[in-house]
Length: 61
Image 1 (cartoon, rainbow, N blue to C red):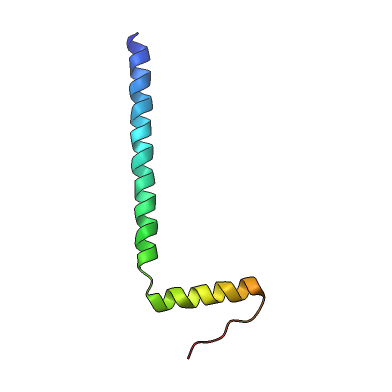
Image 2 (tube, rainbow, N blue to C red; image 1 turned 90 degrees about the vertical axis):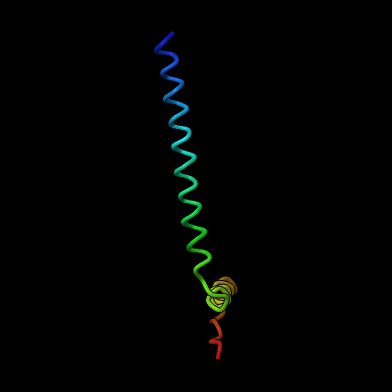
């Protein structure tokens, strides 16, 4: 019975570690996303749209 309880404790601990690791990944991605200026985001979206449409991207003056 005692060994069974230890197994559940380890499983719970692994779950907590997994949730914490996921939180770290999400926080890093959010920081990276917020680091762009609005102009950079617009330029990247224009480039991606032009690439998807098969036309060259227009440079913004």
